[in-house]
Length: 110
Picture 1: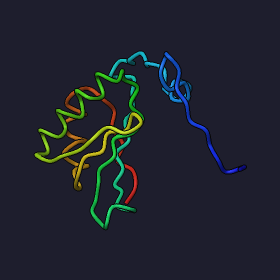
Picture 2 (picture 1 turned 180 degrees about the vertical axis):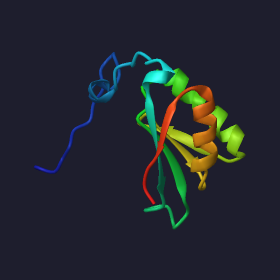
Picture 3 (picture 1 turned 90 degrees about the vertical axis):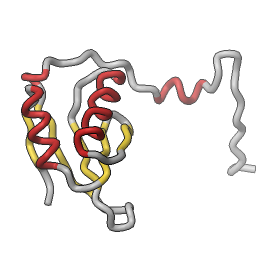
């Protein structure tokens, strides 16, 4: 069957996922980064989500920053593919916090 996709793993685990894993990034100093804040509601049942994009941080630093932003906004969120997603419209609050931390911030989108 041409549509039959055989799936297997080896002693090293699923080798397909190793090709897709992003390399661990080295962090760039905060003053040299420009972070973009977007608002998105498409595909989310009309509920707004604030996206923090263009981060050049290690995975641990992204998780730590996401935790701090969630605490500051008093809401939930997650990290997907290096982009921090914060539930709700919090671009102004996040922009103020990131500026205070030393990042350059641009608010994008409507």
